Length: 269
Image (cartoon, rainbow, N blue to C red; front, side, top):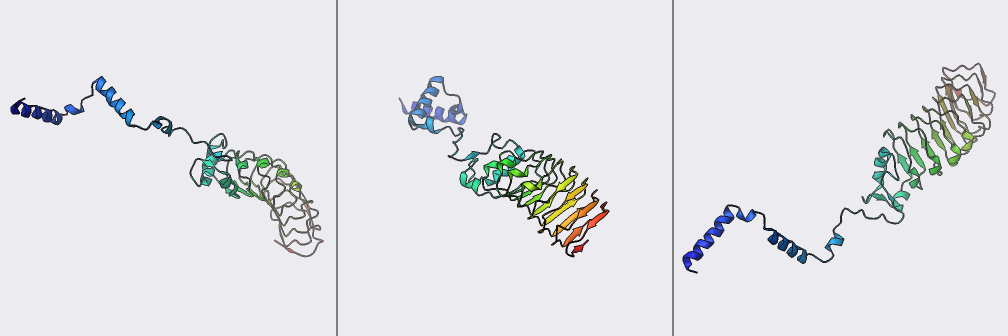
């Protein structure tokens, strides 16, 4: 080939590149060859290592953060905070580290899955839309704050270590505090039950009932009782002779017609 022909050929190639001819689709045969060349240069196990979309199996004892374990999406969002390593699951150590759970005002309708935290002793779920509490999943609770929900019952026999219970402003039809013998603080007003018996709660120190249809409050072995609020109620009789260490009594806006103050003197308000 003469020098002139070589020059013309090179010029044609350069012109084709400038005009974008090199970006045109490859013929089928060339495309297949390029594909085979790429596959040949890739590691033999690239197909097995590639699927990043396949979820990594949770470690033994881990609990996946999904709707199967935590059906309520609002509660699921709350417990994601305990996934400290961000692997999408709660390991045994991550779950065991949770002793207190504060999920106030999160729009939660179900706490199903709370039992995955075996060391839980304090639960604050005030201001949600709960109709029941899975207390059978939290047998070691000592503090329970569940005000301002739609609870219809509380089986305190499932939490025998309970010391503090605030459950006012619910729909609880009956409450048996005697099932929690260690109870020392109880706030339970604005519920539809009309009778409350704390005569067997010898450890009770603070009893607060502020507003509601309560008609009968029964005291008994309450020597530890220090503060008692029985205000804005329909209670007509109150026997305080079994609360000798009472220091504060709140009875404003009540229907009391009989008040037994035969115990030691205290400071009524």
